[in-house]
Image (cartoon, rainbow, N blue to C red; front, side, top):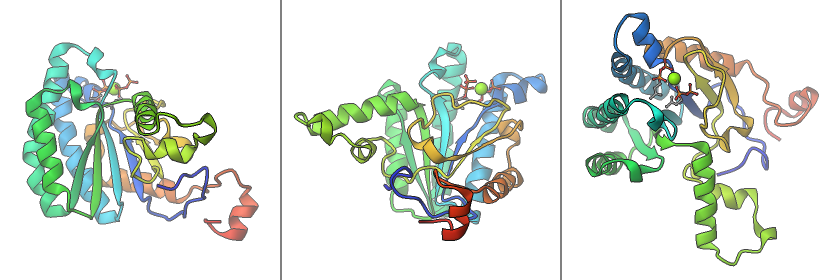
Length: 252
Ligand code: IPE
Ligand code: IPE
Ligand code: MG
């Protein structure tokens, strides 16, 4: 996939690729005096609505952060609940995805998941592999640093005698777990925090960042539209001056 530091991408009003840190489930529940897991359960509904809206708006790629490499630090009951929620969601949503043309992919270190979950993941990916309306990538046990380290391992396995001068951005990018996706145009984080939390560290180089205080379970179609409107107002310069952008249009 083309890199924003090598080639200036075409800018359109609707982002081609949206990446979201779905944060605030726990606080959403706590505000309602509910246990944290109630927020995770409602979070699945928000995913369904946002996927649907992305298809309607013509977004081609949606990447969701569902579980970070650091989320294992949470209490074991919460981790267990999240794993079960993931499993149930895979069971329930695959048929809907097949119907709506959504291709599902899971990215992350799957080796730490149990074999039942891994089988379900494979099945979900296989059943939706032919779909083309939207590619939905769910990042599970994912970390941006993990992805970079993994890419370097893959690169060295493929080219054990590579000369240092031959290492390039493109070569690293092609070995990234998400290397076949275009870079995200729009990044959204719900839940009020203004940080990246080890999400797509490599790919966010020139992504437009959008933060909202809204908790993930409250993030609906209208909220997504607002984020897209904010994106449409941005001037993406990719290092150039504003005058250059206006003279040459969005692309070079
Ligand atoms: C995001 O919501 C879901 C996951 C990280 C799995 P949180 O569970 O982080 O909710 P808050 O941030 O504690 O409110
Ligand atoms: C980021 O949220 C990870 C996911 C949404 C899956 P966290 O709630 O784990 O992030 P921090 O700990 O507040 O940075
Ligand atoms: Mg959180």
